Length: 352
Image (spheres, rainbow, N blue to C red):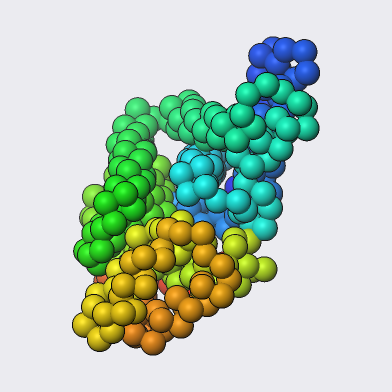
């Protein structure tokens, strides 16, 4: 299925690039922007969201999804590209998947060409526009599908929720960083809307909506998807502090340097407040700063010593098991239950 989605994306981006050729002036500048989107979308990624959409379809339909459905599922990857491109700008991330981030690459292009103005600002502007383009083309896919009216309505309701939730979740995330939010509940709320809904719950519901009118399955997948999606994000939180850069493609301790207000960090501060006030103060004064590797290592040891890492692992396991318990009694076929169980394990037990 992953290969089929990648091929859908390859063909779609190729066709849109050809259709947009008239926009490029001398130097083919807009063509270069589209090429950057092709490189970003086709150059890696787990294709996790289309995979959940696929199993949403399979949960209620007797056969494999048709070409229109696969194209719909591929729109999730363009939405995801938009989120990642903008997230890298917001977090000022230098690398993704082991390569320079898009805004860094366009800043380098500006320097190489000797253009006027700030290379950094140019890179940021280009990455924002590229993310906007990815979202616009995702919308074009969703609203251009040749499907029965009732099916279109079901799909568009889910799609509207996905877009609103991911943008709302992203805003809650930056508010959390700016306000130095420390509560676990606040971080969990961000995880629910920024990640869980658009990574698991809504893709599943999109697949169901494309195949059938099944509100009972939609409700079951809302619960399953939210629990599993939060567990997925908690795994990301752990990898953002303890992950191997050679595997994750991101600098070691990136979340600590960016000051991201994760559940892991909230758990660490809450526990440190109770057991080690000096450690709690070190956490509060260090996160969001330009930390050396030695400082990152010290904070890692602190997070482990107060029991926050172990608590995060327990929370991941509990949420995953609760999601699977919901799936076990969901009104879907055995094949979908087996496929989603495997996907759930893969999403929460990973190193990247």
